[in-house]
Length: 358
Image (cartoon, rainbow, N blue to C red; front, side):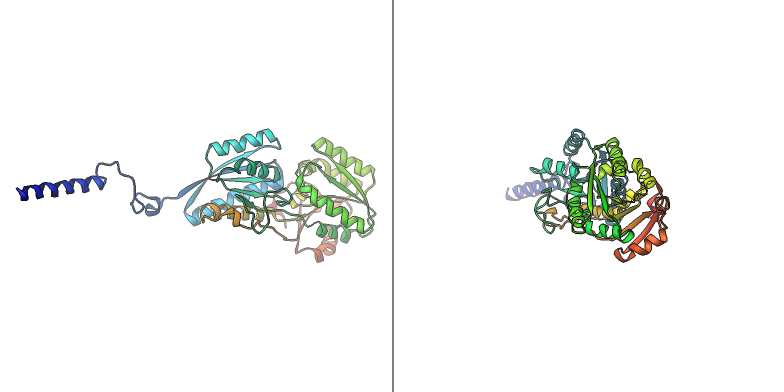
């Protein structure tokens, strides 16, 4: 009898073991299961929501380079980035809806290109664990996006296109030391302009230069502001990394060129659209570095709270040779004058691709 009982128990254990081994096809894959991505080599997919603030050359250049770099990282790290891209065209209602859609779609990370987008994403994710990476935010501390550049302290970090205003002012006076009256053209509502305009005023006041400020919030208003600066008889015009003026540059560059007024700006994209000179960060590199941070958070599992905001000081000046000629200047002469204040001087023609620039 004891032998029969022992045999029954043994058979019971065998069947129980077979059931636990998942032979019925309903098992859950264990970490070392051959069907797991790690074992089969299948790429892990991360959903990334990217929102651009407005359609302009600078910001589009950032987005293009984020996408290109993420594509490169996919093959390097055997991952997949499922990218959802949208553009709010400076409409706050549309922006909020885009961010809400990203949250509803359960993206793994959001990317905000320009300050207003980053701020909307920060507000929408403050009670969630969705990380946010911003790009082209000129002053992330003043806008309270981060606690410090070294340790952001929240679910958000990114790249800054902070403009070294003193450096571009040095270029202005290197080209024309006899400037008496300087025009400042910007949008009062652009956070990216606030600090740079303040610094420009301080620099010019120390030199005893007369300052004329003109502002606009639409292309039509910017055109009127540009015409007013011509009537004001300014010797030169300065614009920081202002997205509103960037959108209007193709509509105003000839106004300044015909009047003999050089337009100095805070990004090479302005020069692409006709401005005399653009100086500042390399937006292609800015986009690539933003993509690197995205990968570090998603793939390498780094915390955005501990990732320092990345800033750049490439010191590159881009001169529009067509506008230069229209102003009665020679590119070689301009280049020689500004070289001591730059790490590089490039030339570009209106509306050509950046890849063609020398």
